Image 1 (cartoon, rainbow, N blue to C red):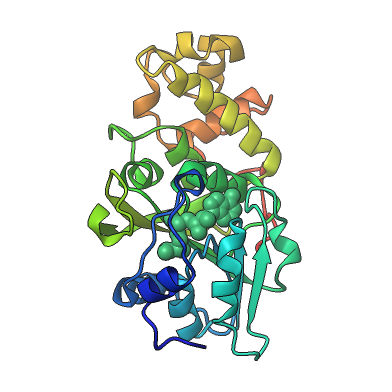
Image 2 (image 1 turned 120 degrees about the horizontal axis):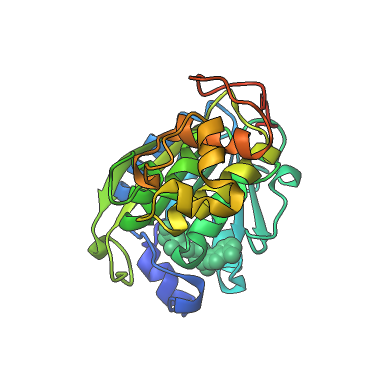
Length: 290
Ligand code: SAM
């Protein structure tokens, strides 16, 4: 590993300028990337997938950690030679040139796997939804987003940022905002600040089918967030649906908590929800956790 060069010198030596189309904003300060890895771990020998390693600032911190394996998924082929320099030949590092939106993570590692990424902002939300609603779910997800997106993931009822992303994220995971980073921490700096979110899948979470109902209900409810639910959910049953779910049809989406949305999803699936259920229920099942 030729780590005696700074990351910036590596980038210059390889003539690598950041590409906007790939959402490239690099973290070149190892103190920052080590801190993110501390929030993500401990890994206790488990595998870690890093999406979008770019020049490898976060990768270097992951390689210093207790991760058993580190698998990199990078779409931009320009970075592959630079990342290959981090391989000490022990077999601990695997580099995959692929689009993370299309890759099948289950085929990349065996056993419990953590996910760590300074996400490309243009596809960050799409990737999060893929992991939350897809067949493969990591042991934990530690993800850098634009601050505004991070706030949407952890928002609570009544917060301005509360919406679909909060409901879907929190139906599947416990979500915590771990740290803020100013735009100046990145090279080149993005227009907005960033934040790291740590998500841990809940033992009991909605089935894939129930998540589809939850997505449909939250899309309708927050699509017209200023309207009462009896109007915004009209296509799905309006006031009658709300009543079956034990929800006041005159409420607006922004005050309905996770349990309320889960009851609406169950009612729209044709189930009779219990009056005041816990977060689990008859439709909750275990999805494969990596
Ligand atoms: N991890 C590096 C760091 O912290 O300095 C780079 C982070 S940069 C915000 C996002 C990275 O994701 C870039 O390396 C970019 O090429 C890569 N990327 C963009 N779209 C991708 C995709 N669909 N699949 C995999 N990697 C992608």
